Amino acid sequence: MLKEPMVLIVYGATGFTGKLVASYLNSHSELKGKAWAIAGRTQSKLTKLAKELDGNPETICIDLEDNISVIEMVLRTSVVINCAGPYSENNGASLLGACAKQGVHYSDLAGEGFWQAEMVETFHDIAEKSGAKVILGGGVDSIPSDLGAFIASETLLNDPKQKVQIRSVYTRYTGSFSGGTLNSARASARAKRSGKFTDEMEANPYLLAPGTKGVETMSPATPDGMAKEFSWSFDWSHGAITKFFMAPINARVVRRSIVLQGQHQNTSYSECASIGMWISLFLMWLSRGFGYLKGEPIKFKPTSGEGPPSWLLRDGGFEIKTTARANGELARTVISGQGDPGYGATSKMLAELGLCLALDDHSKSSHSSGVLTPSTGLGHALVLRLSKARGGNFMQFKTIMQGVN
Image (cartoon, rainbow, N blue to C red; front, side, top):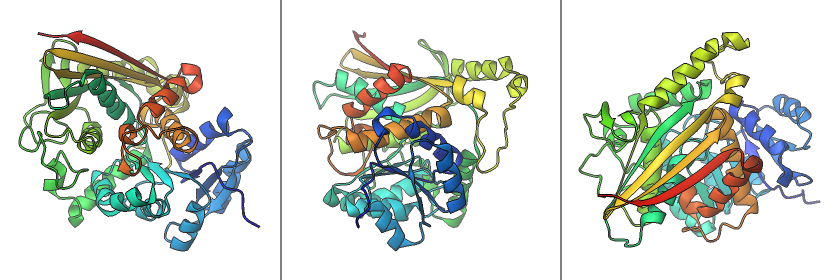
């Protein structure tokens, strides 16, 4: 007898972020009475997690090195979300590739640019033919950046040939660290030592659009879009701006959107942080005694499977302000959200993105298949879903249009 098809499957569900995603989906009204599954490599961990969830998810125990089992799992659903990073070292290509070949939608939380570039080169054409939407950057890196640039430029863009400058500034990012983040950084460092991630690749602003030469190829030709010598500068809107550690990841995803839209000869993108973001982060930590006053201190050197304390998952948040300028006009989009950005907020974003792929009509997005981005693969369908999540109390989107000199 055929097994019941799944709405979606969460692979890597027993990791720190995977548990957050599974817990969020478990309480989601749109999954009540529907079949879904948690998956991973260790049955005992999956069984334990399933018992903690009242949504009765099925458990699927497979190793991503078992290609036959991976295909069998993928064929049971229309959507897979993968939380098992680092993706370059945990055979993420096997799962992404199986989805691309079988026409199953997919997203993950990869921040390993060299691995994402490899997935674009290897599987974009395959996914285009199969009908699969493979969405890069399914969490805080890079949904807010990508949707912010999408909304602001769409508000502004009347003439597709006009020169557009887009800049995103993170003004709030109150969160902490996890072992997964550090593992991804270590994976990138190992890739550099092995030659898989070269200095040229690291400097390429169009790393996720292989072979592209756009307006940013020559100047400033940096992954975050800021000038090569930039460390900080005065800004009339923000007091001062500085480098942002997530900007190289986010900016490349946004540029892939720009390339897919055919705007890379006219549109530039840069990303940074306000000095106020760093001040607010430190003040939040200080006001809670770095967690000691809460009985849950922040772990600044977390091991694999560890993440922010529960109070920070709940009380953290983010805000990003994106400005698009062209022909004397300016459009500004502000996106904000609740929860530790990298984990509390990211887990909800990835879960909602998965539900958007599975349940929503995203046929009006600019691209129907391929290795895509949140804006090109889902567009307004994802904006609408995120704005309604948790009764409208999770993420807020605001846009204004004004003239400039």
